[in-house]
Image 1: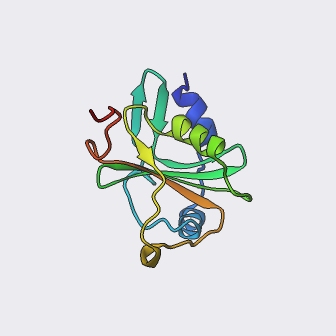
Image 2: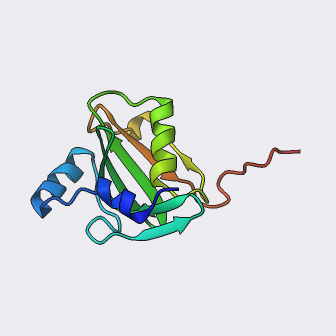
Image 3: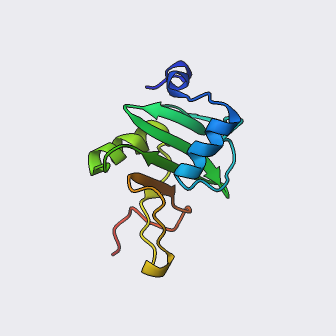
Length: 131
């Protein structure tokens, strides 16, 4: 279980200028809790919005329109197991998240090695098999 103290060890506490530059680099356009963290706790640990450094990656966690969003950038392309680790390390367990690939004309790639995980709206995806 991750404690609040362990989470805070990874938190980035930059100046507003550095925070804005990092957010712009990964294409961040808004969201709640970047400057004032919001905390959630479940049986697996504590989770928070904000900016973090974790295992050589820059992480931004926000809540946009009530849904969690994780943005992770690195100096290399992140693989499945890295994204899976980030999902469970930085997002509460009671949600389903996805990496979204929109239509070609809507696709935007600002940073070559930046990846996003988005919480799906409740009911948008069912983990129960169809009968």
